[in-house]
Length: 183
Ligand code: S3P
Image (cartoon, rainbow, N blue to C red; front, top):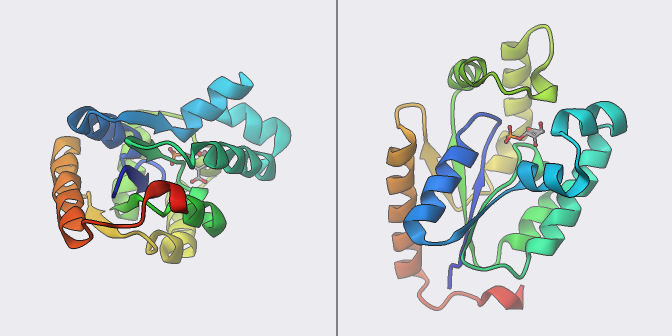
């Protein structure tokens, strides 16, 4: 049975907003990785990157992932770079529908400016060039998703509707998928 949805995708692709709405629609729990990591350590993501570096942050993502393997009926929104540790993705894949919320570099840049939320990796002189570079670097990781939703032309509720349709289709295709705990 599919008992988890994992939203992957670049920064500002809408994972947190969509995740919250989707969890509400499904009556499931929602876990935002960055929020959870900030709460657990009492430090903002920006501080963790600044004081301890990206590698330390990736270790915190790994620790949180391992803690989530037994959680069911949950929508997960890991940060945009979580997929660069493929072992973590595989750890959660059994029982999960993994959805890539795809967005163009231009859409990401626009949302980043609109949101005004600090992203340490985009605090550079030329954010658009950096978005393009990182997107190209990560594309193959995001492609490991079981479903792709193009979000450029959709609002968050439109994305939620797309995902619930994919979930229904995936359940129809594999009514007796591997149970969550067997992974
Ligand atoms: C990151 C994405 C961020 C956050 C951190 C690193 C990345 O999360 O985890 O700044 O490597 O893409 P969002 O995707 O929620 O912005």
